[in-house]
Image 1 (cartoon, rainbow, N blue to C red):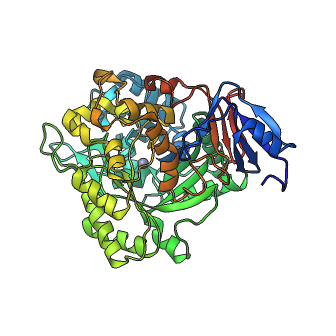
Image 2 (image 1 turned 120 degrees about the horizontal axis):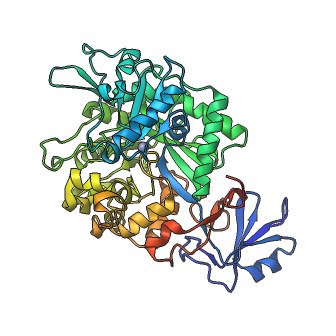
Image 3 (image 1 turned 180 degrees about the vertical axis):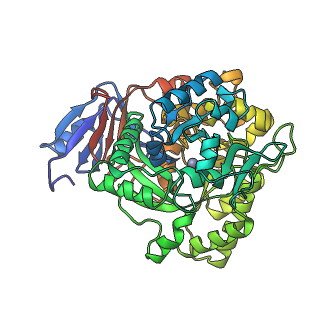
Length: 548
Ligand SMILES: [Zn+2]
């Protein structure tokens, strides 16, 4: 096994969680043997040393080793691009938020864009979104765009509206909305496609209004974003919003050896035709950068209160918004399925999920030989019918891992505690036999997988009025189930279960070295586990002794 090429390395720790059929290696002193980028042996250190006498040894003492975390759906290229702006997720009041934007405007040449990201209106502006007039207080000489933490709506100041070519006479783009006051004037708040056209190259109908950055700057920012993920133990990540700009950036990073996490790229549906015309389909790429599927959106955001729900949001008659028409959804599902590619459709509310399932069922009926496991991104609010239909289709759920911990207040306000028993339904998916992946949707939720694990296991809200409350206790799962979701589950969702997610011979040597055993610790303390090292492809990409 370990004869060819360079000599193997043995890595030993007090516990090795393999996520194979038995979660642990039971040995006096367990070890992994690594050669090149693969695992070439797992078992007792003494046995492995006898089998591989020329192997070098790295001893992690009392630490635990687990497969690297795989965040099936987040936005590393968007996060990298967001570094242009001010991260406002910590702003606790209107004053602080406006001050931060004002000081950024002071440092920005007049006429250039001022960008604020991760604006949480629940935490900073009392649940009410700011308007153009609020942002006009910041500056009248710079266009300003403030993007909500859910990344599905934003606010422009008057200069921003002008720079975007929007006026009271403007018609919203298909799949988008322009908010108006009672007199019909634009409030500055833009939803869905109206926001995407401003800021997201992968989804804009033409060139986005905000300028795209040069490659060198974008690469520096991408490196920084990936490093933060590595420091949290992430070895693989799904980028859920990739267009040509993002794919070119990721390829450049791949070529320069700067991808420190493996990326499963979900191409936005706008670019599917070009992809198809080039003769490509899901699976194209390599273990570092692979096209994992085609991303589309059926509804709005769960934490933004815009997803499409059967029962209206609490205390309203609002059922949320559908962002792609049913005909478009059906047609897209049929084309992508027929081409042998994987669909990854964003659907949060139960009504949106049912529309997507109908589209998938029709596509499957038209081409029953094709058995691609399609994905429902977020799949936040379910019922028995949805679970049964997903199981039938072999569809994969990619729910938020940490929204209970992070967005507790908003969830109770929008959906009520009873409905939360059917949301982020990890327990229901497992019981129904629906494959389920782990995901943060960062920057919409925090990316730390250990925080996600804690949220799935405890369902305890950690912030605001609901802090300490258990939300949807029937959906709690065990630490082992949560770890499986973030390792084997996410690997399956990306079509890479054969090489990732388990530390077994032949798999990629992607793993984390943790200060404590995540399967043994009190789950409330999971987020406090320290990530000593993160290895991707048999090499450390993060070591806690490295400078930040
Ligand atoms: Zn997302």
